[in-house]
Image (cartoon, rainbow, N blue to C red; front, side, top):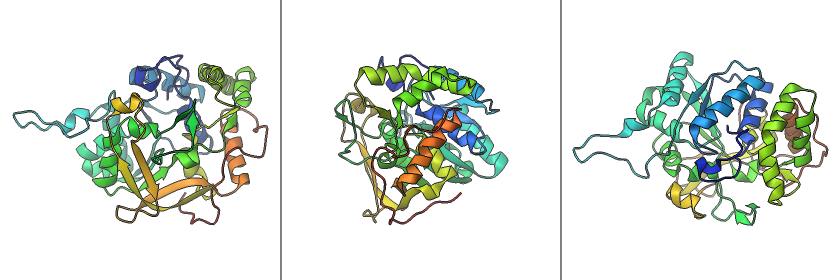
Length: 336
């Protein structure tokens, strides 16, 4: 949740401003009455400690009584580690964020985790607090990209950033647990982008929340314009929140998966064959839920409008959403 940082994208390895969509996802969830018990900030969009600061600023701007807790500073090792004397190091990933999630699960007896960053802390929870992890109702995660995605930014095919930042974490959750899992895939989250002028216009709004979001988004928006990104930008993470709010607007179905793992370091260097692909064709793995599109143009437009309204803005300028809409004849699978 690094909206507002002026530099330090890709866990501090880039001078580009980090992405902004995590904060919009939180605003969307809160605006529609989702009981958010807390935010565990993790590395990914930027380094974790600065991200805690910007996450706290976002929560304050939304007027929410939501704790922000620091999570993972680094991804899980590519393979399980132990010392030469045989010490198991599984517990070394435990941090305040992991302990916070374990505590909240014990207190409530069951929660949904909306995972819109790398899955490091959720996997660490599963490995070290199995009784508490068994109380997770489901994980709704912003993950899932094909080996050769059709979506590009600056001429580079995009892979699932949350996955490449910690491939082993997703593998643990899919293959070593039975926690119900919903993948909000790149096919879906890249749809229905918001026109950049609409996002920029928030900065001059009379509404203080809208003004905060607009001003905090400007470093990223300026960067996109300088890079000739295009006229509109997908608020990727908000698609996960929308699944909790209005799942009937999304095309979802049961699916298996294919994982091609690799090192986050090589992925950062441009490796693009690391992928987590969900498809109904894969019947030889655990079956999860994969969401890949909107059920109609009206559903996509409703989603666009809800994002802007959640941060105090107006309706999106066009009612005809950009991008592909999913096959409305596919099985809808979701729950409130």
